[in-house]
Amino acid sequence: MNSETTTTLSQRDAYKLMLKEYPDVMDIVQMCQILDVSTKTGYRLIREGKICCIKVGRAYRIPKAHLFTYLCIGC
Image (cartoon, rainbow, N blue to C red; front, top):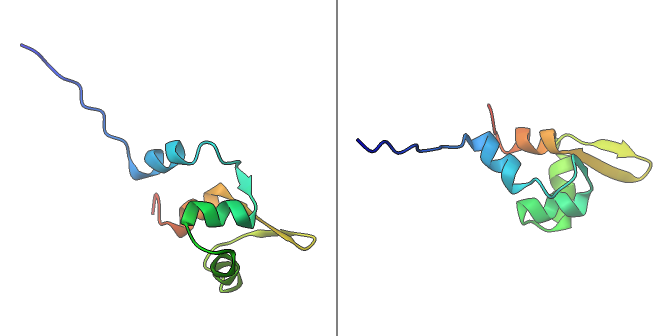
């Protein structure tokens, strides 16, 4: 008998692999690249509280975990 092993990734693991080249805490431009939206839309998502972030001075920093939450990964 020939048994084949099929590996399936969870959605969370798949996103971790796809986003591994991005830092754990990213800036607004990197977040917008991942979501494929304009920076204007990215700032709106943050302003509306849809994506949680950390404000450092005048700059926003978005932890990758918060982006996963926005994408409902692991919900």
